[in-house]
Image: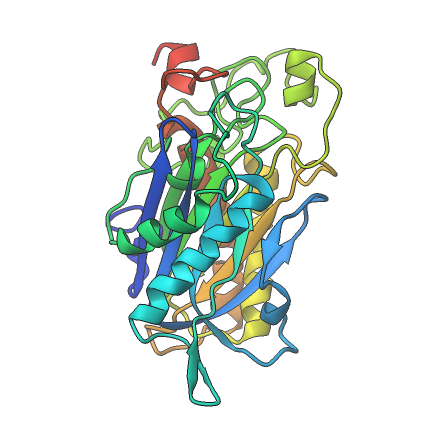
Length: 339
């Protein structure tokens, strides 16, 4: 396995990503735009999700493909971002055709970043619809990671979170890409060390090349959470890691759902703890089919295994790429560890 050319989800031909965010708000969103409709699915394993149009992604439901996806900050307010992306796509003549009308299909998911030091005094209507439109306009093969888009105000246990991406080129010729906004209750680093849980999967020193700590820190087996760090009582819905796993393989909706399930293994490999009752952990899957080829059984096993590894790398990169900004309530990885 090796990383793709850009080590990004946009190594999947036909996908573009755009960010829009606001420094004062300390929040934003990220739009994933499909050049042509892509087969999509979703798997939710966190206990406190916030979503839009995820029911239609189940394999037994009518609509097979989507025009885009949205990851957003803002808790439930951020669900408005999908309306902005939908408006952009409608102006492009995109969407599912029904009764002579075009309806862009844009599922979305949100994370909680309302208590991150940013100003949320936006008045009657939240800014997320307009930010969604802007993110769609900004969609390109190159985009910013770390403290940008949906990762603008993200946090983890003791460190800033962020927007991360990674890709993997498989021996079969298929490519996988992951995009994730890391706002986890748990920690991406091992105990009190600077080492990432995702270290066994790292390629080419993409998040510091530190490997695993030796010896392991004494607190490595203790679940470190935002609440264990600050002593506050747990609050439902105040976390969430939301992500997209994508491939250029031709998959059915059911096979795409299996890909989303497999990608959740990357959460467990890169975050400790993950999938808690207070996280809304979710993975969307996209299959563009641009290779024009379905994986055989052996290739499918490799594809699903690599989905978890690619997602783990993207999570670590999201935390590693985060930068210190004025008004932050948590340090970045670089700020804390001086690297």
